[in-house]
Image 1: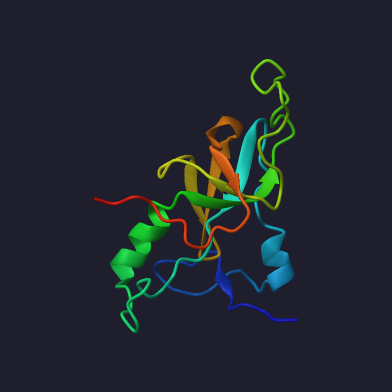
Image 2: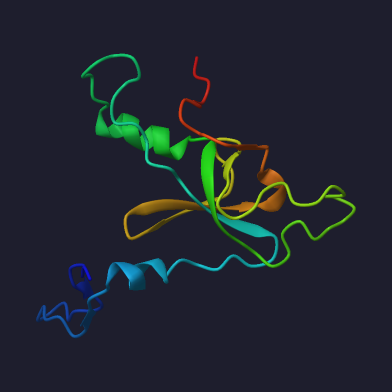
Length: 143
């Protein structure tokens, strides 16, 4: 069982003293993920490649890595709200994706949030444009 460093809850600005802290195991951190409500889908952003494809040994700058993560079109479905794909008029063929799928969306789709250093997005159920078996090699078109 691995523990993470202490989390600072509060200090007194005149006399900086920790007045409360908590250590979280990896399992406890995982349970802190938000549960999407309504027709929302919680998605994780897959880890980005640290090196340029095909160019041996050229490592991406931190800023480039941040943009790749920010503008990614591939997401991993972590959880789905209870109302996802329930609108039979809008989704007559049923759900477009399910938990555990890799999906394609528009680059800036959804609300971005960071949980324990990992980037997540909460998107609408109709933001899913495709499901892919293997997301490796799928890149956003740049000019």
